[in-house]
Image (cartoon, rainbow, N blue to C red; front, side, top):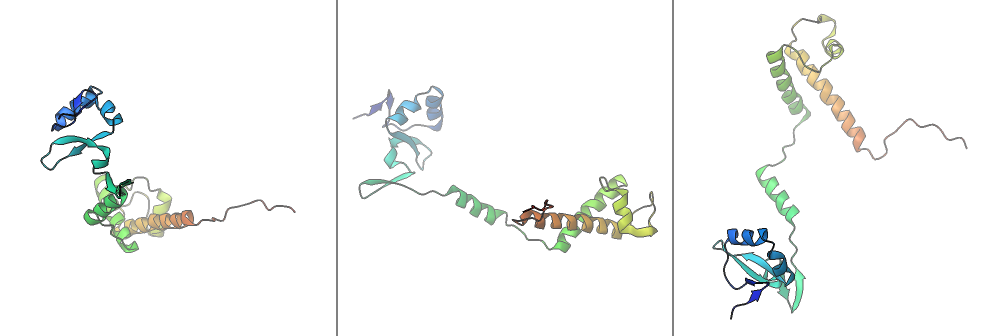
Length: 170
C-alpha cells in the first residue's frame, strides 16, 4: 500500500536532488504539516518518515521525548581537539609582537603608527629622530604597548571600575 501525502509518495526512496526540487516547488511544507520529515539513510538516500521516527525524536514509554542535542558542546569539543588554545607567557607575547614590528621596520624603515614621543621615551636621549632603531628599542616598543593593553584589559574585567564621580552632598 502506497501512502500519498499532499500529492507526494512518502513510501519511496528519494535522492537529495529530488528533495531539493520538491522544496523549490514549495511542496515540502504540506508534507511537514502532515507530520512527516526527511531522514537520511546510510546509503545517501532520503525517506519521508513520521516525525517521531526521525533522528531528532525518540519514543520512550509511549510518549514523545525530545532528544537533547547540544550542538554547541560538540562544536567546542571539535574546536578544542583541532585548535587547542595555547596560553602564552608575557615574554612570548612580547617576542611575537617584536618580530612583527621588526619585520615591518625592515620592510618600510619605520614603525607605522608609533609616535616619535614613544620611541624617544623608550630609547632615551641616545636616539635622535631619523636614526635607525635598534632591536632593543623595537622590543621596548612592543613591551610598552603590550603593557598598556594588559592594564586596559584588567580594568575592563573589573566589575566596579573606579571612576571620577561628583561627591553627593547629603
